[in-house]
Amino acid sequence: MTKIFKPLIGHTVEVYIDDIVVKSKTREQHVLHLQEVFHLLRKYGMKLNPSKCAFGVSAGKFLGFMVSQRGIEVSPDQVKAVMETPPPRNKKELQRSQASSSH
Image (cartoon, rainbow, N blue to C red; front, top):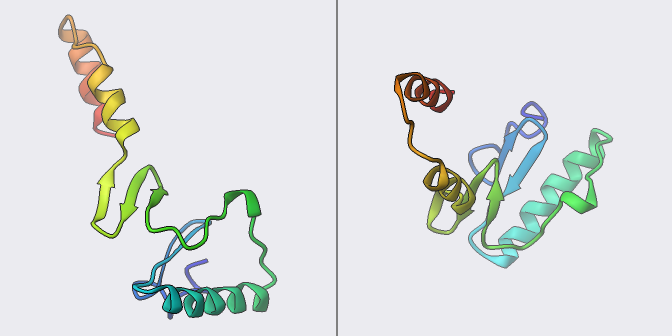
């Protein structure tokens, strides 16, 4: 995917494995950017899964993060999971907790 979208990555498109985000400042630009992406997808015979697509949204979850006009933020679901995790009760649980959080 990165080869296909190389000229657009960092400008109007971000790609991670098989996930694509098309970013634009205005609705008009967004339509043009989507047309570029669709053209490349057609050119290389690639298809999108409609159930995983969202068009024209100003914010959404991408790779576990919330992406919006403000930037990239941690998902509230992840914060909740950390906050609800009980504290370690002994040294072994502390080590296990530290090991899992470093991945």
